[in-house]
Length: 292
Image 1 (tube, rainbow, N blue to C red):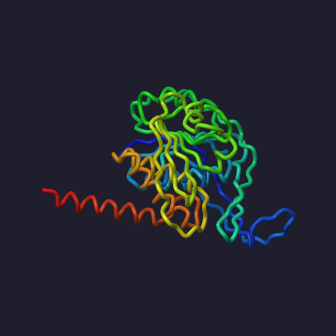
Image 2 (cartoon, rainbow, N blue to C red; image 1 turned 90 degrees about the vertical axis):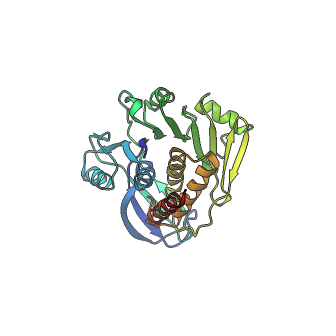
Image 3 (cartoon, rainbow, N blue to C red; image 1 turned 45 degrees about the vertical axis):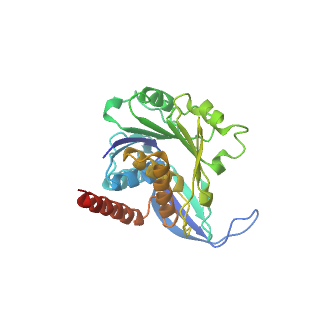
């Protein structure tokens, strides 16, 4: 069991189920899919909680009924919310427009500025995961590097993201890096970077490092909803690494988690992930029992 600190968004996702793919100038009918828990904090955190880790979330929500709902849902799910701050005003809702083929378009308001407080004492944490544009995130990451594993998602811009492992998707990387991807990643993450992992949907994921690259195939999946798949992949990777897996094994585990995520009608990991984790635990118990 690891102590994992997440710096990530906590969202209320409002789902609009469209009758056909989006096209410019088109007209669409939708079915209101209601609201659901979302954001990197929930999408990454829940899987780690289900895997038996202690997870605390650093985020910000409004001082309104939606914020109350988010905190209640997240804490009930087992994520420690005492580091989530409340700001005046309403909590921003994310509009997720889902098409019949599983594609989604996200519309959201500009996020209010979120300033992190002074960094915590890193000795109590095994992992710091950053997937947020919060001010102060760079300082937190730099102070954590010598004390725990730091995993970061590549930001939407070119801001620094000091970490040991940097993750992004091929779509988020498109048009941003020309030439050597490893050198590009080091320019973002710094000299502490050990691996730069680029996921590419059904094509799998590739890890770049100083010594070369490692490709791990994706797990076949019947895609229902791709929302949150990258967040769940990060959770699976973190779980693998803190469980003592080597990088390839951790990426294989992450691929399983991501495949389960896209087959679920939710932003957070599907219930099938619980079944997978229970099966893995049973296998480990059986192996330990048979050991001489």
